[in-house]
Length: 549
Image (cartoon, rainbow, N blue to C red):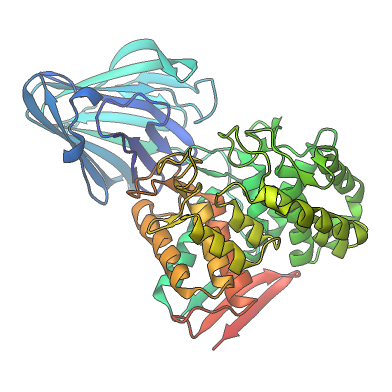
């Protein structure tokens, strides 16, 4: 059974499986938004440390270290890798230290590309003075803590990742017991945007304070000059649905100017009314989803209402109408139909009636009608169609029922009752797919694994329904994961809590803060362990101070 492990420093993340020869598209060493190494492998005097000789049960994980035991040709070999900080010319340096016991003649092999995690072309790679230049990073290998770095350049090798092939520069270095890998970072390519106003949340509950702090820090590291990455280290693009689900939080946290720019980027990139599902770093948009347009319209309404920038709606009314017309052209009446792989569950072909997208559409109509952009009678027509066809949308037993409740389509008590009936709630959070469905797999990406997104949505609905017991279970699940990755992450096994996704995810963090704002503060659905709250947020163009208790 494979297990992904993250060792994360301030900017350095190592993703590995419980063998020390990992050459999979998910594996490697990352520095914030850039892939530094494609793989790391260890050759001992008895042979390569590889999946077939790793003893999974003997893998041990510590806060900043992981250790593996291998049975290689009759010999037990123990390999440990740890992250630590050091001083380099007065500035902090990150190091990975690899230890080996059971073999005295070893080599480390690294595949260097220096490319963006999702780009097909390698960045600049060179080996000079025994140092390896990989994109913006210098890597130096020091055997036995020697003063001089060692690097044998073996040239290029074809490295396969899924259906793609890349030319990877292969570097080896001999060592006996341990080897130290220095990673020295040059300044990042993009200057991060900063909030225009200082937001904060504080209560007399340490757990809620910690959850907010983790969420805010997750948003901070994902904030870039052009918007927000969906997640690190995998999703280094500006994904539409991830951003639009987060807009209300981002405005309240003081990022309204960057929110406006991001919305305009997507609006001006539309084609025939379709909003892109993502925009890459080079500005190239990609299309092919049915939930992006309705989520975009909700985001526009949220931005206008929360920031007080009503001119945005009037100045862009024509483009907004085109985005709404695209929804109608690709729906039956007002309700969408999925063709498979066109919602956030983009690995599934089997979806036909996505309840969450229906909720986004009706919510967008209601909000835009309230702003005077759409005629008010449209919402009544759409709601009548929903009531007539509701049963079709509830045949799928998935966590999407919770998003439908968040966006006002299904009462929270009803949604939570269905979530319990479908056994979506586990000690690790909310499963994406019900165990009652034939496709269920506790580690299946969209068919059973627990997501930060679904767990945060469950927290929102549980608090709205006044179910404090379930709300505390979900809050603790998020905190357990945050203590593992140090941020609010993407997805993990519903059975064991093993991470199987990005270790910092925008929509997880944003929905946590949105829950605090919209449910605890605005609706006063305050859990019993909170009696006092102080909250500062940006709303309607000014700082708003809120005190409860």
